[in-house]
Amino acid sequence: MIISMTGYGKAEGYFKNRKYIVEIKSLNSKFIEIFLKAPKFLLEKELDIREIIREKISRGKIYINITLEDEIDNLYLQEINSKILKSYLKFLNSIKKSIRSEEKITIDHILKLHESILKDELIKINKKEFDFVKSLIGKAIKDLVLMKEKEGQFLKNDIQKRIKIIAKELEKISFYSKGRIQKEKEKINQNIRNILNDQRLINENRIELEVALLAEKLDITEEIIRFKSHIKYFLDYVNSKEYSGRRLNFLLQEMNREINTISSKSMNATISQIAIVIKEELEKIREQIQNIE
Image (cartoon, rainbow, N blue to C red; front, top):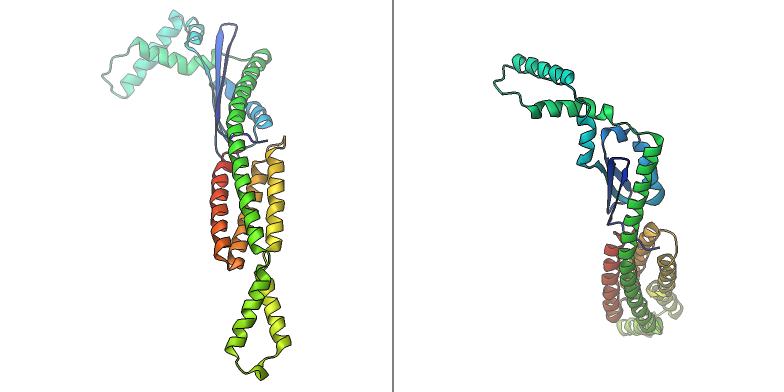
């Protein structure tokens, strides 16, 4: 299955008077990396949240942000009473005195102190509420995957188009390579005879052996066969239901190796030019594969 590693998903909903917003973003990475930003009272559930993500996503940098909207502030503001206010004011005055500050204490200072001390104490989460949060995470991931699948379809179409170009160019190489070895053998034999004018110095058997060995080194039949095999498996994985980014990357490396060998062994200008076209297409596919999960 071709699925992009980049995407964005979002889900939100109310649990009683608390509005949760879950946003999840995915970027390219060889491995899975998860970065969580959430209220402190949810961080104790971090391992559970990470496990939910790992079950659905195999690769990428995953940024998940869980927030509560401002309505939640009413919950902890209601808990403030005059006794608490006085204790905060006394505490702030003692700090002001110890650091010899001339700054005037405002209500904003008191509210911020209240938030930092008591907000996470007042906001607790039980199993039922965390189940609700997990369901939102699941919806956000589903939204993310949907976007990744849509982008993945574009990648798949582009990759298949380039593989067809490569297969067509490889057939050209196969065509030009036919009969080339025999022609090279005849050419080498003639060059040797031109150099050694005295036929008595020529050992025909030895020459035939050396020419045959040299011709074998120039033969690219095996490389072409392996390349075609790689193309077949590559297309199989492109159309498979499993995530295949790593396997596609491996096969692409093998195809690069084969075309480099073909280019170096061919000693033929036409084949070398075709090899360049294939390398260009492989490089474009490589860039696309970097974005596949």
